Length: 130
Image (cartoon, rainbow, N blue to C red; front, top):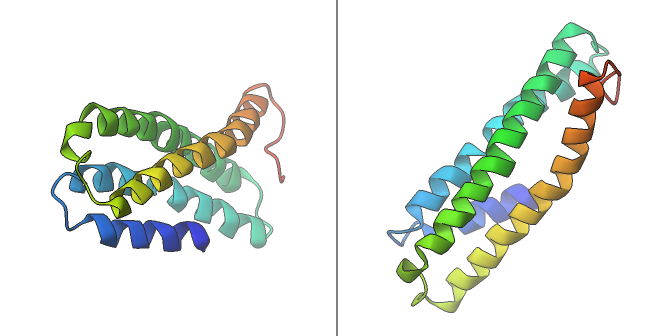
């Protein structure tokens, strides 16, 4: 809840400026992994931890790593590459930029567990939670 509330607040704050429409797009794209996380949760609470659960887990891991690690990292690179567009901004925007970097750290923290589970699955181990 806190994560999504902060994202909504940041989104509304930065949409008044021209440049931050681009970071908003790549930040929004990272949410595609949530679809598979929710599907995984749905299968788990229904006690269906078979093939559908495994497929949702693999899709979650792939989309999480692709969007929240690689895509987010490229987005941060772009943010700093184009810093001349936002350097003269008001203080509030610097808080947003700090929040975006905090989100990157959070994604890297979770990526460790996601990658560990994915590698275990590739070695033939069961997906954690099964």
